Image (cartoon, rainbow, N blue to C red; front, side, top):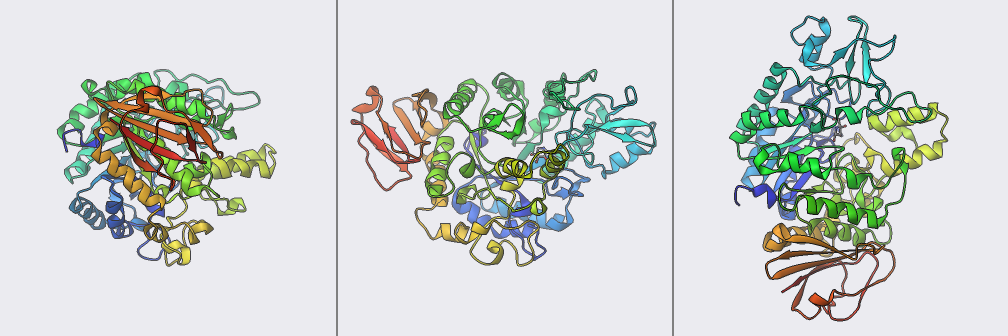
Length: 559
Ligand code: NOJ
């Protein structure tokens, strides 16, 4: 691999709490992950991204860190982590860690100090403000509901928390804070990790002055996101981090960036600007949001999805780099969301993977996606664990929204959809734990599980394996130019990738019906090879009209 190994890699995200439990306490752990590394190697992935495994009171499942340089008790010890890194490297894979430095836990020693008094040396590691007219300093809401400010009785000031009140935002204006973070990053890099996924990293530069947002009708709080996303010093901080830390190692970085536009992503990822390698953009994940945000359900319009992904492909074609994803621990399962998780579960899971994996960029696979795992519908709120879901439920109840309406939103968009335990086999709890799982396993584990997939040559798992192999054998998938065809077609997602004499033709049917497809004339009479399809029929004739089955996907290499 060359210096841009991360451009040629496929990343697999592990959400440790729900991956594999080795000691029967019902919570996934590091030894559990080690026991499944061969499963990942066989899939063909190159890089593992570990969601946070640091010490944490788990208000937000590890995204609230109380010690950046230690391991959460439930997950194991530092020795287990060292063993994991060694075993990952022994198999020729790489490991990237989650870097959560927009905020810490309120149980982090920095915050405990900061709270002691306004002249404590750590006070300025966080963001404190006086109230305004007996109220919060601004009317911003937190991303998990309620105000983004929490009052501190002792000092009579408020601190900012863009997420839960147990996740106070760090003050990046403070140079000592930045130095401490860089030191901590180096400590992990010196242990030999291969990079970082950076949590909401475009939130770290807060505005110079804090001003109110515009509340939606009838609402008390407003979004502050226009003020804190991509803030005034964000590029300075990332360039400083790059210069002082990242540039000294051969690592990959991906910044999670809600609200990033293609223009900004060019700035964040252009090589000569020395910031990050790639970003996670959110625009395509918002296409099925109504005007009131993610819980406001709206069907996906395929034409919008095509236009959006195409815009991103084109924007980062010459400089910068895309990350490609439909799933992660914050998103519902894509097969339920964009496909059909009943009679066409396997077909649609494979089709969605095809659309993504044949694009230019680094693909990310989220645990269980390779099995076509689906959303969950727990009968009542009591089985849910996610702080965002629980707060949303409480707020909607207080507003008098009917139960069924609230649950419909949670079923469609709740983050717990992707956090149910991995389904390894048909044994009790899907083989995830011998104890009581921290979160109930999706009952469909009896049919959908890794063991079944490994025994079925037509499984979603083997299809992902093949997509990953294709990326490694055809340069056109890595570097070909992208061109969308049939942009207004309501059911088909068709695109070309072109490199020198070779054209990759990707044809995906998003409909539950048969759809006809006519190949563009310029490709009709050339030599073509069918690289992959999710149906039995191996029709390779591009010269006449093709009849695509529900959710059919076909990829041709035309020479
Ligand atoms: C984004 C993470 O992906 C999400 O899980 C978390 O709740 C927030 N950032 C806060 O850290």
